[in-house]
Amino acid sequence: MKTGVLVQQMQSDLERHGYYPQLVFQSLSSALGPEELLAYVVHQEATFERDELRRHMSVLALTHTRLIVSHTDEHNHEGEIYASTSNESVRLGAIDTVVLNQVVKNPLGSGEPTLSEVVLSVGWGAVSRIEIEAAACGDPGCEAEHGFVGTTTNDDFSLRVSQAADGDETVAQVRKFADILSQASVSGEN
Image 1 (cartoon, rainbow, N blue to C red):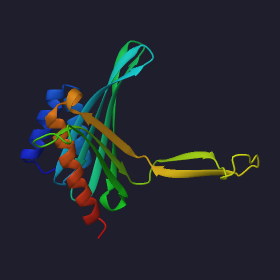
Image 2 (spheres, rainbow, N blue to C red; image 1 turned 180 degrees about the vertical axis):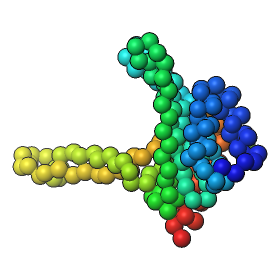
Image 3 (cartoon, one colour; image 1 turned 45 degrees about the horizontal axis):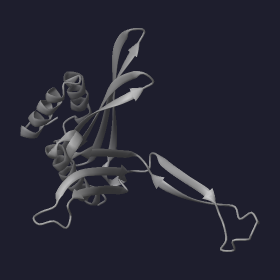
Image 4 (tube, rainbow, N blue to C red; image 1 turned 90 degrees about the vertical axis):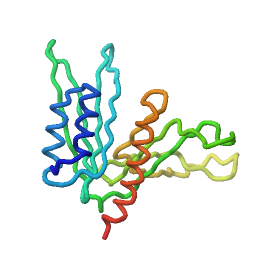
């Protein structure tokens, strides 16, 4: 991985989160290889499994050719703590959709509206969700079987951050990352 200010910032962010920073950084460094890091997002969240609280970290790293989606989780097996980390490398030309849903406070108020949360969804066709429902006709008295209708949606990766939970800086970082990724995925199709 080419070193630079952005790599140092990412390493600093990983250390600030304090969630196995050496493991996550080493794993990302290996996945990035010699490519230059263009943008990144670090997001840590708590997850609940039965009666246990566990931490989960997602890191998105963008290069000129790929999006790397990294996940790190901790596990407890017979009283011993384990961490697992995985990286998925997605060719930019394979990305079908980049969706950024933005929620703003006081959209009609004076001054600039405040961005309170964003949801970034990225699809590349690895995981799809199918929603099926019974088909119907316009006749309210009809009792005939009309089959089923459905929709298929890419559901590869989604990340939600909010001002309240993650802070203004993280919300702005995800928004900026989405803009860069959106442009890179269009450029990656050439």
